[in-house]
Image 1 (spheres, rainbow, N blue to C red):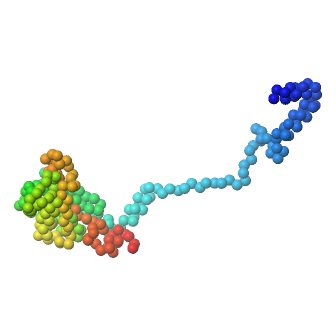
Image 2 (image 1 turned 60 degrees about the vertical axis):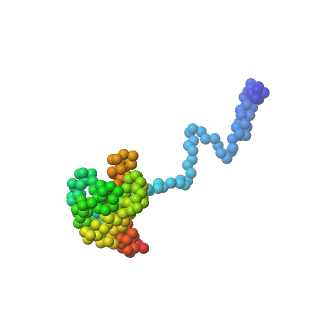
Image 3 (image 1 turned 180 degrees about the horizontal axis):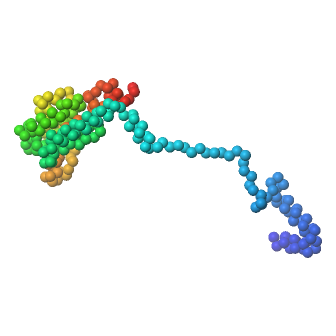
Length: 248
């Protein structure tokens, strides 16, 4: 490189014309004749065809929710109103027991849950209904008897083991208690086809079994009133499809 600049300097000193010729020759060698260098005054040419990317339109979540609501059949909405009305009626007739924390009523869009503490219905370790249980169940039957819905009667116990000739385990005790409630509801004119017995024993606690208060809450019987569309025997396949607005 040093020798190159020495030669260039010598030529420049000797002959400006030769120097200019050499510079021009070097520019031609390092610059393509087909593509001239772009200067600040020369804009970059744009391509003739420009690719335009169209934005992807996403569904508005609010619109999707509207579509879901529209897909709900009139039958489902009617069932929800029935469950809501039954919930209101149960709250009204059972208000004293609800205040004493012996009964609670919870409503979902597809089922209604009525919980009764076992102490309201049974003596300790027994499955036979106490005398004070009949008036409560009669009030419940008056409300539920106006509905066609299936009713699951679920028995629950605390975790204190029981081992008697009549009840070898909490499974047996919980199922027997649920059966006693079912029999009383049948006496109060609830159609037996609407009723089912489930015994859960101590395996679905709602409170801590290490305290007396927790065990009191766990000893309970639930009446779960199912939506006709989701009850196993509450409707035929065709009726269930119609309730769910499903085209088979």
